[in-house]
Each structure stands twice: as C-alpha cells, then as structure tokens.
Length: 353
Image (cartoon, rainbow, N blue to C red; front, side, top):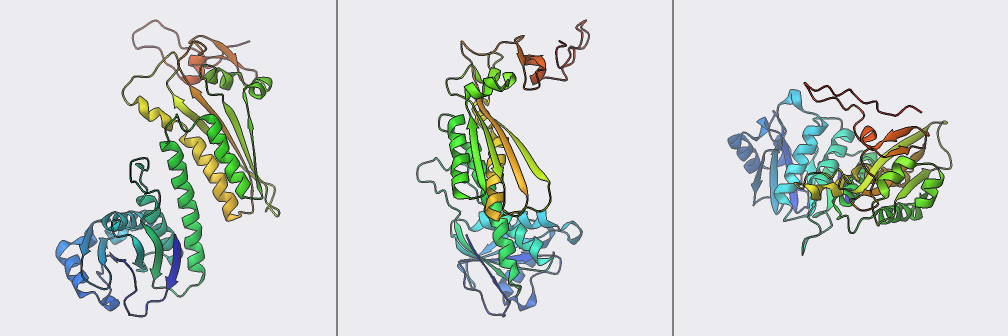
C-alpha cells in the first residue's frame, strides 16, 4: 500500500473514500462537509468510537464519518478501532482512502494507528475461498493535514509491521496439510533469501536427536511429517550495543494431543497451534526489512503432535536438552493438582534422577 502525506489546503482530496474522524468538537469547520457535520450530529457519532455513517454524495465516492468516542478515552487503540471501522464500511469501494488527521494525538502516533487499523482491520481469514482476494482493498492511503515529510516514512514502517502481522495470520490460518514443519522452514528460508543480514537453518530429526532434544523429538515421533528446529539469525552490519534480542516460538503445526487426544469439538482449530512460531518468523522478517540496528535470534520448534503407532504415551520418560528426565504429562501440565477430595498426591514437574 502506497502512503502519501498532504497539507490541508481546504480543497477536497482526490480519493475513492474520504474518512472524517469525529471527536467531541465535531467535524472541523474547514472540512467543507456540511452534510457530514449534520449526519455526525444527528447520529451522535462522536460518543462512540468506531461507529460510522456513510454518505454517498460528496467529494469522494464514499464519505465515511466515524466516531472517536469520549476525549478522555481517546488513545491509539481508539484510532485503530475507528480506522478498522472505516475500512469495513468502505471495503467494497477500495482504491484510495484519505484520512483527515484531527490532531487528537501526536501525528506520528495517529498515523501509525490509522495504518494499523486499515491493514489489520481489512485482513480476510477466508483467503482460500473461491474468488477471495489476498490483497487489501485499499492500495493507497493519503494522510491529510500535515506538512511533515517524515510522517510518510513513519507510516510506511507501520505498514511493514502490520503486513508482517497479516502474513503471520496467513500462516496460522493455513491448513495443516499445506503448512507442514518443512514448509514452515521453507518460509523462513524465503525470508532469509530476501534479506542480506538474515540467515536461517533448519535442523531435522537426526540432528534434533543428536543434540539430545528428547522432549521435542518425543512430540514429533508420532507424525509422518518430520520436525524442524528452525533458527533465524539477524546480524546487521552496524548493530548498536551488544544486546541480542531473542524470540522463541511454539509451532505445533497440528496438535491432536497425541494418544491423549483432544476433544473432537474445534479440533480443526489446532492448525493454529503454530501461531507463536509464525509470529517469530515473520517478526524476524520485519526486523530485517526495517533494517533495525539490533542483533536478533529466533528459534522455532516446528512439529506435529499426532496420534499413531509411534506416538509417545502418557507415562513415557524423555530427557530434554537440559538432560532433565520428565514424563509427558509433567511437561504438558507442570502445575497439575490432585482431584479435590481424592487421596492423589501432587506430582513433580520433573522426575529426580
């Protein structure tokens, strides 16, 4: 999405959709939108953040008037909510959206929130449906009311982050038959190939066993799709300081619960048990794209947890990378408590040697 910043000249901005945020002071008098001001007043839009009214006549194909809520509650989340509501109200029009900066927050903060609401709010989890589009309905955003040349750069950086968040959501919504641990590792390699300072490696079953990662290998042993321990490293040419940002993500690409199988209801949602790993992978990609001056390391344990003849059993003892022996039910439920009224004794989260 292209982003532009324009000063408020008093003339209508050429756009398919014009968004008019309405705070306690109402529509700005110099907006030239008497109809919008009247509707905002009649509908009481200012009192509720995200409440919209759509006008079909005016300086754009659609004029969306959106409430910002009480002044004392107004913050960046309020603006995100308002921008997402505008996007939902006008997504069938799409194209260019112009947003009038109203000065309710510092302009960089307001610009970031508008971009977040617009991109995150138009995300469609049904991209696999016939005829569904994978692109945002808006390809251009014009922020009206500033002559700060750096504001566009601020908004572009926010767009990079929001786009990465949506890509992580895509991964989490992908069916487990398409997104196996190997394919998740392929996505990490794709990002590394696009950025010079980002590298990746993916350890397979033999390397995992050799490193003594018994707990991870135990979870993976019931699946026909081999696991991958994905490691991403971002090492910019001139990092600031010696701090390394470490991110760890869980990526169970499908989690049946193994032999201790989960209930059938909502089992299909277990394809999303890798959302943490997706966030780490796409987060490292965003860090590299933004060129942040900090070294970063991402580790993502990707596997399926499946029912099968090779699946681990309750009571099996495995040794983790730290060589600590543990039972399956202990690492899954480390704070397990006895049933009320029973004589069962609490179990330790690990077994003593």
